[in-house]
Length: 321
Ligand SMILES: C[S@@+](CC[C@H](N)C(=O)[O-])C[C@H]1O[C@@H](n2cnc3c(N)ncnc32)[C@H](O)[C@@H]1O
Image (cartoon, rainbow, N blue to C red):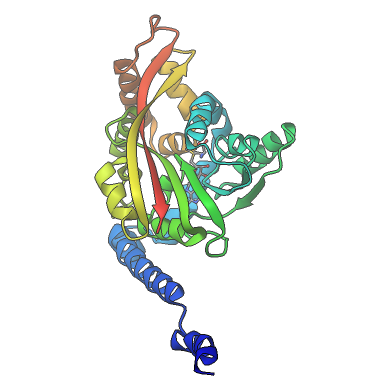
């Protein structure tokens, strides 16, 4: 009789789901850290002080900037490197993948071609229209939703893999972004980021633009997601097995450095918006500095009609705790 009663009482000896409790504690810790970090990284802009716009204003103007121009045209110039990034991740068919800040689908589409069950999310609805058209043209089934990397419209532990290429790095509050990565991933799930590196060409381009049109006070520069020490610190609370590697990527444009500046000014929303905030003299000065940057990095054999610049991004992979 005693032997028979043991299994029943054993169940009652451990009435708590220990794994669940650990997870809840970890999640509480992540949320607290996210709040602390978001306070730090947006102290001036969230406070509503005269020193800067509110976070709502910052986010609305970022959304407009990404909707300006036509990022789809720029994305086509880096579609091959996006496919290479996806190939390195080797996501097995059938895995549920969330591609955050998916734009026109440069990474979501090759992921779907490989058999993953893909959802792409982005704040710019016009880019999602292009992403849907691209998927349809290839007969691929991909869900594309409008949403913010800082507040993803998905339940906890919904995805096996989260990817983001040159995307979530642009959300203004990195602490919230890191917490959202962790929240929507299943335990053991994989995060893969491609983030422009501060010392690379894109890092320098954002620096030049920031000199002419300063960003709102208190925001962490997006390219800090491309700095290994910073990214390890941001992911530490929710992830393990963090690996980072600098990957080179060419910007190869069939035009002169001045043409490259015009190309970005026309199609890359943030550059277009930066120019629109300057008077004529300011626009000429920004164009001259950007042209000098493109020219200084130009390795093309015919630099008057061709611009070939070697750029770098930090590839980051990590496993959800
Ligand atoms: C440089 S594009 C990259 C797009 C795409 N991942 C690619 O590699 O082609 C940056 C993207 O981030 C999106 N984005 C910026 N901030 C965002 C946010 N807070 N939440 C979601 N998407 C965001 C923009 O709308 C834009 O599509």
